[in-house]
Image (cartoon, rainbow, N blue to C red; front, side, top):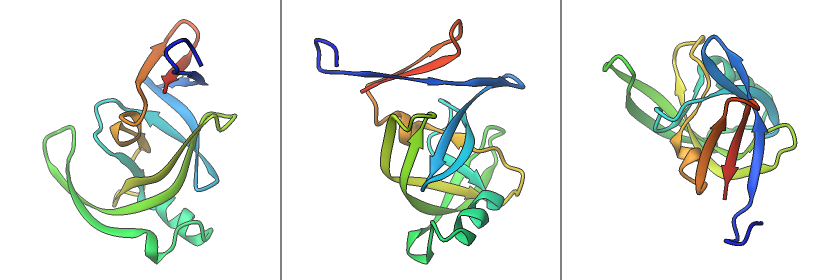
Length: 138
């Protein structure tokens, strides 16, 4: 921790097709998510949700209901909202978040988006493009 009591965690990212991708574990299952500061929630596709469900790491009790989201083109989308008991960011699982809400997009090929529902839980998020790391301060 620094003098203010905050500590920083550096998480490497990979640049793919113009987006920054970080390694995460959703309830212990490794996945890659796009860092998306323009997304208010977290988003996974139906394919990932089915995978997590079939692995037994999410159950019927984790399904919270439906949410209506406005997507980047302005249209509305309805998706299932699920609760993930644990989301870990980075290869070393340095950052752990509990009870994270995720919207499931009905599109099987939807990108996995790590949005402000998690990013707002830390003091700051800084992207270091020279070193290819995202610095989370909390």
